[in-house]
Length: 209
Length: 209
DNA sequence: CGTACTTTTGAATCGCATCAAATCTGGTGG
DNA sequence: CCACCAGATTTGATGCGATTCAAAAGTACG
Image 1 (cartoon, protein in one colour):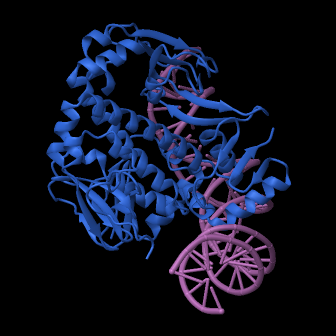
Image 2: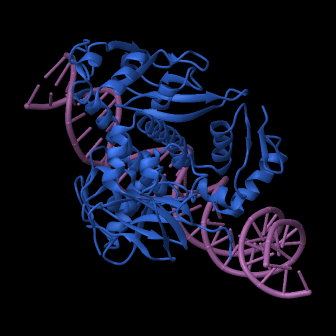
């Protein structure tokens, strides 16, 4: 057992930024849902009746090709699944829990109404989207760099302040975010430190020069 | 000279989706600006007084490290530069035109007002952001694939409909979007075609199987 | 016709992924 | 308290695949 903390409707996900900026009228409509690994949250062609927020676990947006190969469009952890579906009638892809996951389900129409009526919610939602956008743009630029050392340096300068970052995740997860294997991340970090390019102190990284 | 088309204030950028969904009151405040290659649009620490829309050319959001190396956070072509700055007092990075570029400049406060007052503009802006987000998430997933053939297949399934895409850009630009050199894109396309994985007809690509 | 650009192919190299395995770590239960 | 286990961390050896440099052929445009 990972956590003994109950995941009831009220209070669940209260630590998520999205929940704090939601009007109570909408928050009260949240229904806790649990999905076992590999179970579908929604499927291509389904009408968009609900908006889902991932609290624990991971949900993947996927499309399948005829030969069974799947293409991952998005992985959500601690965030909404397919925000863009808010403006669609039908889902254009399938959402699958890749591990046992706890979600919150909101009625789509109530969500749209809240967005329309509450100026605070709207502003917060807008801000949240903008920041997410900024972050993703930086990550795309980073992933398009070919050398591991360049991605690491880019990460430190883009995500950190004044050439310094404190990692908020284990290195293995960081490697995945950088589009690298954990082995090459470890090796490159060591090499960069040996060459005096960076200074490493636990989870604190500092770019030198 | 690339284009002889005049870039006056009125009418310029009228073909951009962003301009169509903007209330006239805001559109009228647009000022046409031209920046020569390598000239700064704004710099770190400047107050956020204006919002810029790239009409032609390219603007890069960058941060500099002490040794002069620059980290590109975003490249904008035909879109807004640093939307997230709307919610900041000061810029946290520098914007530079990487080639001769025509921009439209909007007063930041008028922009915020329009967003607040016009429900249509707000809705359209929200939709635009959501779709951009969806696109970027898919691109991040794609760029985190290690093999060139996987990125190409991912692109066809994510950006296309029913395993089919029509490329809207030269292959060299497509290669950059895929995070590949143009050489390896050409080679991989040929190999995939030889192996019967895809069918290529000019700019029309079809995934087989 | 000439210029600038894209498209295409070739050969050599380098960096990362991969497979394998040892060590370290935090947390569990005996 | 210690043995134990699952996971993260670290190092090693090898091969593949993409980059790189080079150059030719094709294409759009003035």
